[in-house]
Amino acid sequence: FLPWLPTEFRANPVWRIALNDEGFRSAPFAGAKRPGVLRVACIGDSWTFGMNVNQDEMYPARLEALLTAQAKARGVEVMNFGVLGYSSFQGLQLLKTRVLALDPDVLVIGFAMNDSDVAGYRDQDVLKPGPVIWRDRVKQVTGASESLVLMKYAALALRFRPQDLGAFLRTDAKADQGKSNSTVNYDEMEAWTRVSPRDYSRNVREMIALARARGARVVLLDNELWPESPYRAVLRGIARDEHVTLVDSLQLIADERTKIERGMETQFGLATASTVASATPTPASQPDGSGDVAVVFRVHDGGHSVPTHLSIVGNHASLGKFSPNTLAMHDNGAAGDEHAGDHVWSYEARLPVGARIRYVYTNSGAAGRWEGLDIPHVREVLVTRPAAGGPLYLPVETFGRLYMQADNWHTDASGYARIAQAVADALR
Image (cartoon, rainbow, N blue to C red; front, side):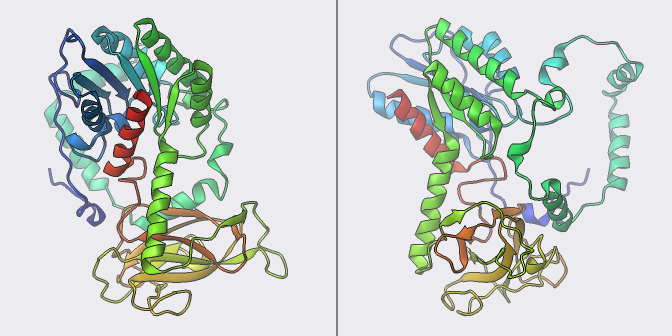
């Protein structure tokens, strides 16, 4: 087997995992709880597991450190029951079969991100018996054959053709063609969604009831970086109805991101990112061109060497229309750049109000070739009209970094620390 890793991933930090003998990223679970010990069970998906961070940086580990410091003479035990890819359906089963038997004093529940996945099946249907199909039997028998697995790998390797980021950018830009994800009708797609919002509500409410029946208190954790998710509204409704504390991770992370962005503006003496007068799309085809606004993209080089210049490319003609390394950004105090030589590169483009723009940055690559990409991520902005007129200044970004995020779906170590602090504050 010859491993293949895209260049954009090779500089990513390594994170290490240690599991207990039950397969959970936690210390071994003691059976009987020691008198006077506060026992907290954190149940959830990859956010609880601690995707992208080391053992001491996942939020359950940070929570244990915070509570231990608060409790002083009292013992604290925080158990991590996070499993990558789990939905509230698997979480409910895990709660019944393993977690409740350990008699936690507090249950922290964090699900939603995987529930909303339109995977083509419902989690609950996987356990239902169905007709035995001969092809499935053959797969079961042959699946353990190492020779067949190797042959399959060889066949896939011969067919595999890695795509450049341009293909993903085009697909992403075409996916909703400017429509908001809030228009997704989960009632119509219930049969193809892992856990529908309706079933999600039932699962979480049952978890709360089961925990309370054993004398445990409950904290809910929102774990999506998708502001328009309908599951967020469901979770808020559950928290309100059940009188349970909800840790709003999205808001926590958004607030911290804003602090970083404002700090960049202050540090380099730049214009504050524009406030928005209205997010209502304005037709771009008006004769006087009033549907367009000047948008200034700004990115700090992040300490990276820039042999020639940083570039921007996106899904609009004013951003190169998917052709990389053709639109040079500026650090010369002109063409939208505010200060020459401050390592903040800028580019001003006229874009239609209401357009959902996808874009990426590159560093000194050859024109037309996907070289010098900062991170394997497509950035996004909804163009709005500035309240005070003039250019729409976007927040100052940093090349090679997403503020408060480790990847498209997870926060970073700083975000997990803020979540742990919020849970500790709720328990206090």
